[in-house]
Length: 402
Length: 227
Ligand SMILES: Nc1ncnc2c1ncn2[C@@H]1O[C@H](COP(=O)(O)OP(=O)(O)OP(=O)(O)O)[C@@H](O)[C@H]1O
Ligand SMILES: [Mg+2]
Image (cartoon, helix red, strand yellow):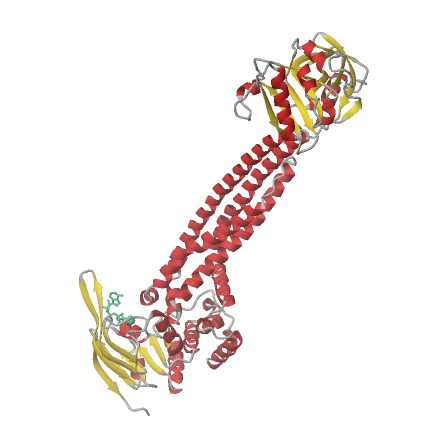
């Protein structure tokens, strides 16, 4: 018996029982497709989140008021509550390093805005002109906040695209006076609609000079300070510099937290990679189930074809040849199933990418390779038992049964 | 060429021992035409399976061409079955999904004969049995007599020395049964050793040596000189 004889025999055997073969193919294909689709979703989510974080800016450090023991994000830093506030002077002190390219103080609050009789509530961000460069934002009309002394509370604002259309409709927004809270601001720019951004939706915000925001919200403190380092290598020195500088300014108390974008990115990358492995593993279990199905089907096949196996023995098939024939059949079944599953999985992933363009769902290569390997290995492994049972059949009994 | 010495075959059924073969002594020379008859359960099939190495004796000795084959391992026995023994069964036992030609080819595939040689030998075997036009038919598209003759072609494709037939006409009508027996006898005339188990007295009588079995023993062993 050579390879082509074996595979031809297996192929004919599979074709001889089309329903059974089809069902097995589907079971195997679903298992493989599940691995492909789930890992592609995990991978898509990972890429989505890391892309989002990258879009925050480059070589970015974020300074939170409040101390956190571990360098991560904890409830107090999230609440922004702290014994000692970050001030505008703190922020300006951070520019005094060669490694810092630019900084932007950030103040956030909610306020009612109105123009003529139209009114709504929005998120108001107080910041400086540097923010534009740090976040790579673009303007649709006009200009961003002026590059004046940050302490100057100029009554100007830049509005998000959706706010512009809601308040002004087809009318020109630039130059109009907008009421924010109890103050009036002149619209000097409109933000371009930005693809996506974590946290703030630029479309729904109004930006004003940081000093104006401090007056508006009646607070001297800042919500965050964004610091852009000059290079990737400068991130760690800048982090040290920030901590040391603010410690000196805060009477020796280490009461700020500095998070680097890299660290956040790496964390999310790890989380989502783990998630992808986990769902891939779970899906691989469904492949094992398919393997058990193969075993059952091959057991049924062996008992269905008892007479045939007896005949092969009578014709001079050695036990090993019988084993090889049965395993070849299972192997062919699982490889066809795996191939079908691969195809289905890729089609489904493409469908997901088509339906949700923001989610780059694409199964990683390792997942596809593992899925196919697991399918083949389970197929062969689980057919060992039926194959050995077939090889041990007593030919006399096998042939006498009708 | 076939020698059985004090061969016993016992089956344990529940806590009872059935002596299917009871002290069988039998010598068959090459080229003989032997019929085995006897009532149901007398051990005819058991004897045939033993000769065909599908079964092993509980005790006793079996020499095939002077070689003790009872002690051979599974692989060796399989090899011997493939090269030296052909089987024809009452139920034909053709593989339903394979064509007639593919069924005939099976023993050669197991023997790893090269494909080209396989095709030639299969074609020649079908030609000899006048079945060339049925080569690509599936068993279900063939009559009983044709199926059994395909089975005979398959049994003889490796040119075995012994052909064992267990009630080869049992599932056939008189006409096609006659065809099958003639086919077998033609092979015997070309020197194959033919052993036929049958219930049909008329068929049994055609053999030059007739064995009658009862309760696992050989009751009578008659020969007629060949005409
Ligand atoms: N595998 C087995 N297990 C138990 N008993 C068996 C087995 N095979 C055969 N026998 C018994 O051995 C005896 C001989 O059986 P065998 O099949 O050789 O008879 P036979 O002469 O071929 O009968 P028939 O003409 O009906 O085919 C019977 O009593 C049968 O019940
Ligand atoms: Mg019988």
